[in-house]
Length: 398
Image (cartoon, rainbow, N blue to C red; front, side, top):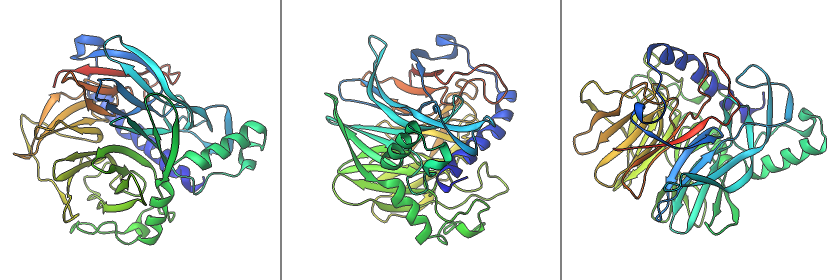
């Protein structure tokens, strides 16, 4: 499998293995208000990142559902031939009317109905909407891999121009492609292959000891606003990257691999980022929470106390409320936790089993929390129908 798609397959295989346990142990969420939340819209295509504009509209990055361009000898997470298409999009939701409309459509999606990789992050900054595409354009398969026909060559061209990129749009319409952060982070892992693991005294393997070492990896995932630009976490390069509005990206921090005795993922796989005053909070698929000091740029894994037995298995998304709290979805356990930065304590907002693969989370103008639910097909991995449009945007009180 080409390098650019390895993280995609590996991430979904990990979801399959761990969620099989969580879905059997934890009770599934009930629909609507009986689960402690309200469904605002449904029919989303594998929703990931969520953000809210100043006028209260909610923007959702949807990774899509693959398509009809299939690659010879490459398998999807369903064990079927890996396919792709222009089914990823960014939607905008009116929370008062509960209506969804397209903001940007026709973005590349790699995968299938159960779970695909496409648009992964969104951040609204004034009258600008930033979107983040997953994977990278360094190792897109050649046109021969999908037969070389018109649909195949068209997809390859769009994938090379868009995967791993940041885009900038405006609510009135139109958008432009900006920095190629996927290619930047891919090259960073090649140039810094021995830095991963630094700062973790119990385990410092370095990239070359990773069984999936390629070398080179990038899968931009989480996006968040900050003055002068955006922060991005990359689940392939395992980095926090600063993307200025003008100029080149810069890696701020590389996250250490977890102790393999307690790890969900072999390496860090950061999935969410939340600027919180002078610090940046990052959490990963291992349930690790990091505080990155914006001045010294040092990574310090948070020593978090549990309140009422609260825990985080694997972060799906996070947001800062401006009042000292960071809300983090648990994509594997199906819960939502609150991290109090003053006391460094973790408490449940909603217990495990409330949601199904929750991903992005944002705080609305109305003070409510908006969560991307069913970020992966509800029937995965235990079976059941899935047509790729089962995602939801739900809201709840913090």
